[in-house]
Structure formats: structure tokens, C-alpha cells
Length: 97
Image 1 (cartoon, one colour):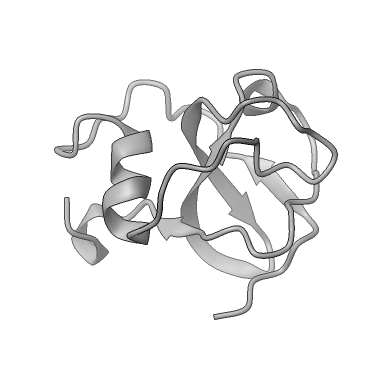
Image 2 (cartoon, one colour):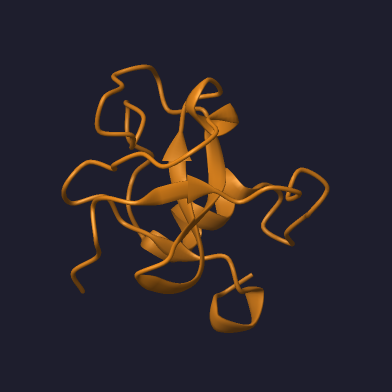
């Protein structure tokens, strides 16, 4: 499935949300069926990916989880993500958590 690489924003107010997977990082790993990437998903960042972050995009319905570093997880405003980043739905009813 092809996703838009531009226009992503962090979803505010998600820090208190939890997941039966244990963490949103574990949620991403379990549902993407991929290994955790070494680097942040933000296009202009090569920091270590540390957290599963809630993101939204006006061109993609729903909320998504992507691997981000802690700095990018605090970004305000839009940013681009790297080509090929796997997005996992944050909707627990649509995933295996």
C-alpha cells in the first residue's frame, strides 16, 4: 500500500494511551511483522528510532504508528517521512493488539 510521504504531523494528546502489546513500539513490531528500524522515520533525521509515535496526515484516513526518535516525536507542524516507512494503524480494533 502506498502512503503519502509528505504532510505528516504528530497526533497531540496520545501520551496517556496504552496498548495491550505493552508499548506502541511493540504494537508497531507485532503488526508490521518487521524488525524495528535503526533510524527515525522522519525524512530529515537519522537519529535512533526509539518510540512508536502516533501520526496523522490529511491525505490518509486514520491515525498511524511509525518509529520516531524522541526529538521528532515532539515536533510541531508538518514533516515528511522516509519512502518505504511501514505505517501501522493505531486503531486497536483493526490490529492484533
